[in-house]
Picture 1 (cartoon, chains in turn cyan, red):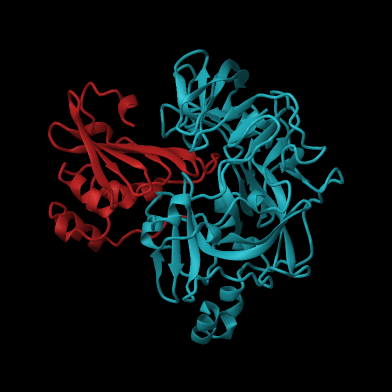
Picture 2: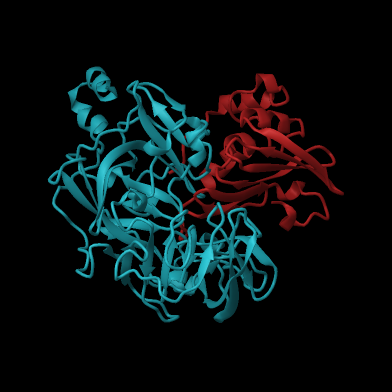
Length: 419
Length: 158
């Protein structure tokens, strides 16, 4: 009904942009991007490369994992588009796509309430926010499909602009272009289902909004209308994911490719096997201890972080002003790290502990070349003294499972990470 | 792509009434760099509840719990100035509210660099802004270096 209202009030020329996000330029409905390997319908190729091309040149992404996702108008097998360079993020929840990467011909319907208002989301990351309507799409990743899944479209020029209490949550401003966002979209496949479960009970400022034709209002959003971890919507292989990436030498690589496998212990190709299982708490955190010092109780492993972020006085930060949050040791420095599982309340779990090692190199020299795979890239974690943020370099040379909250496998019950 | 700045007249009007909570507009007028009374304004504006106040030797800490569960701490020196704010939890606070006059100063300084979505740091002589985290678990702080009381460990401002 909202669509009808808007058609009547705004005229036909914007019908597609309102009722059928998106409003990006050009594009066609033919499939593009990488094709999943034939190693299983639950497997899709992932890559670490320079990122999507904008105005003829790649963004120059670093340690950023991408895959391709196909979105279809619900129920259609022909009104579909495959979008490459969707960032694979185990630190967030839900599928979000930049309008600029979507064909204007793809008529994805808005998620609306009974009164005809459309649902919109303010997605906040630490650096900036992304605003846009929630639409419904059949989403295919590899051979898996999530039907009529709430999906956010970011940067829809013809949609209402971000409310003040959305934009006020960051100082960076809106990340509504591919360049600002750093990808054509993001697929959040962390160990939980929703990004704002509390939004189902109360209106949280700067999260979900219902928008009339004139106004967007902070609103309660029921769990089933919120953007959602796509894995939870798959018909099968829906209890978690396994990311497998090759090992890489200290010098780094230009690009890398690996696999994202859906399900854990659901097929012959996703068997748990012998591995360390570490439960995460309600905030997806683990405890990590650097070189045997004080445990950092709000640490995490996150494919969406593009380096190894932690605070230490033993490493010098870079003097170059635009990279002063990174470390620039003159020589490579090795560290040992103990990682321990946490219960839901954040208490360490006895027996869930393992040791790993890593090295930190000179960020300035690493960033000066064009490699997109930089395993030794590390920097400060500006917001907290109790966090070790082990980003995508953790996944290099490992097979890492992320199992959903409440899901049971042969080796444990989620939420957990295992490797 | 910075968001539009508020126009200067609104900022001036805001500053002129910053001690009058009732006259404050919906946004801004508090609190970093402002008197301790602005903590109350903050709590009202972000619909939070003041949880506790703790005394340290050279500063006081007010804790406000936001509806989302995020804990916002406001550090006040003994002369009554909010010299730092810090937060942790599933959502970010309204920074226009909690950073007050410093919000508009920080916006044009924020820039894309080699970092990802999970980290942002702005280091200036008169304001330090640091935030990081992933969806549902953010932590951050902002402080005025020149207003931090002598003897305070910056590591305690979180």
